[in-house]
Image 1 (cartoon, rainbow, N blue to C red):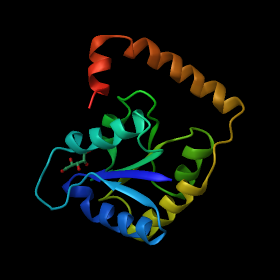
Image 2 (image 1 turned 90 degrees about the vertical axis):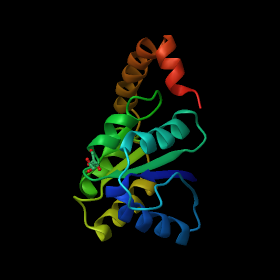
Image 3 (image 1 turned 60 degrees about the vertical axis):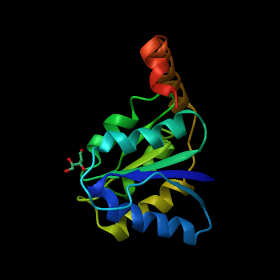
Length: 159
Ligand code: RB5
């Protein structure tokens, strides 16, 4: 599985831990930065991962900023993206089982690194339950079609 990852300065430490963890597991990681602690704007980095997931370049993405809030707001602007801001093992697992989340968002300033790595592991291994949850995702897909059926929506999805 190919995973794209990015953070802002506040999520950098978290991102580095996760990249190391994924590489140790032999995963194919596409790291979109940042690579230094200089202050940046989280949308500039969240967009890179959201676009890669939106276009099917990667199957999954992971984003981190201070709280995870900004990155999740950005990522969920993109069609086909289901970004989940998770704070514990329960929400990480449920985001896969019920929401088929394809981007995991973690707060660099809100989560302990060891818990975050356990969450990443569980999130990557957990499947989608389908059934009634698929019906709900289909409704979100219909909503997206309405929103993105215009020029601005198209532009957002271009590289
Ligand atoms: C940066 O200070 C902080 O605002 C950002 O990382 C994030 O938490 C925004 O949601």
